[in-house]
Length: 197
Image (cartoon, rainbow, N blue to C red):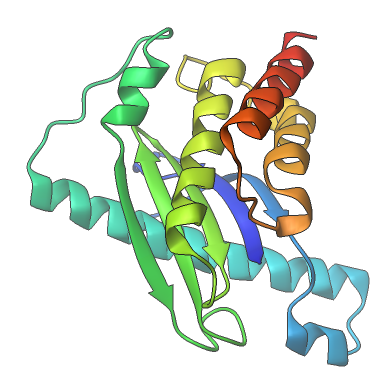
């Protein structure tokens, strides 16, 4: 099962401190096991969840920075309409998150760094990482193409309902889907029809 899906910044922003990352979108699937047993108020649970996702975003941001430095490639800004090219040139990787940092059990964070944005799936340790990577690339492609997230002034925060709709179709309740060709095509048509509204 996927624990959460994040869209966050991976490049430095003037408004943030060094090493920080701004979370633009977050969707958590199911509560953490330890949180089920603890009695937390809704505000405390929300604050704890926010801190956990911030830890993941910071660790992914560090991994993206290291990957980009090691590759030596220059980051070239893509113009709207070149989303497919930006996705092909995206940096990708996996970060192991130890038990207790930030989740109670060990998890894996798969990430794609597309220019200044990071797309991250946090999965339980037994998940099929190849399937998770394919799902992450599919989600990222749809976000970039339909929501025009690479353009100036993209309104990610105002389009969260569309991202929710994408997740409900491509990652229902945090479950990774094995897709055959026919089902994938029907899902593509359904997503395209929804995004055209």
